[in-house]
Image (cartoon, rainbow, N blue to C red):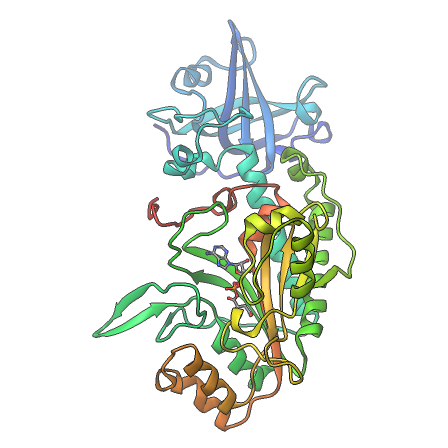
Length: 437
Ligand code: AMO
């Protein structure tokens, strides 16, 4: 095996153009394919920017360089120094005639699945060897889109005056009632992985007014579904002096901004994933919980008031609500303890879920900003207020009225990348059965 020695990349594959005909260049990458025609070999090298053709002819490439081909096969990592030659037959109209080839890594085995086929084996088999699965063009497209989405989200919030924060992920209490906790031993005490940044982001509104966080959330999900993971990424905001109506406006704007950015900057990736998506235009439809119950009733599904809405039921009205829409004004009993009830109708709370068809993307609401009410709510939900003293005492020093939301980045990615299984849009997914790789 060779080493890189003093060879360093001078160009990426997409820089190899007819305009630099005759220049000496150095490229690095992975061998995507080799075609051998006796004295002539074509090798396609792939790097992070695309592909470039190397043409190795017995008449133009010395024997000591050509002999390197004997050690190379597909999926080998190599470095090449050579001269650019313009030719209409090559991608971008130019190829490289190698003068030096360094063989850096040759695979001992070939991937147990085809990297360039549309039909793929079972996802679990691919996840077992995720680092190699991620070399598939469709996988790469998903994570390029995710990268662009993250940049757009950060850019949007920063431009609107939100401060990016990081809150602790090892914490002492639950924050989300329904979802189960992952306990861990923190020195000699019991601690938990954070289900959300909820209580910390609320506290921070007193200091910074507008905050956002993009970070992991941990949920010990009991059931195994296509849209639940044990570790997911949530995009959270919390803002002072606003209500749930105001943050719904923020949420739809950040979603529209992100999708507009992706449709503009990830055209090839979207095409590869066969997603002909167009950026939605705000405002998104807003439907109350009661109206959803009415729509379901018309489809022959009767949900008792106060119950959560099941995906299987929401699928029945997906034809009527196929895109993004909000479900607002949920029963107070169905939402977390920190959500504020309506002043004139305490059985309903100032809350919303953002949906895409039957997929929940986000939830949020106005928050309780009175300590007594929060203590009452904790007791109602059988939480011991003493355990929340670290949070409750902040209220003694005053906290502004505030509202916020959390959206599942991975759930949004399922929509943006047209994927049915959330595991496809997460590099190394974690669920009840999977802790490796
Ligand atoms: P909620 O519990 O609804 O609300 O979570 C917010 C969003 O996070 C995503 N999500 C998940 N994604 C993948 N796997 C999971 N197991 C999972 N659990 C949740 C969903 C969901 O809509 N603190 C509140 C938000 C707020 O009010 O600000 C919260 O955590 O897309």
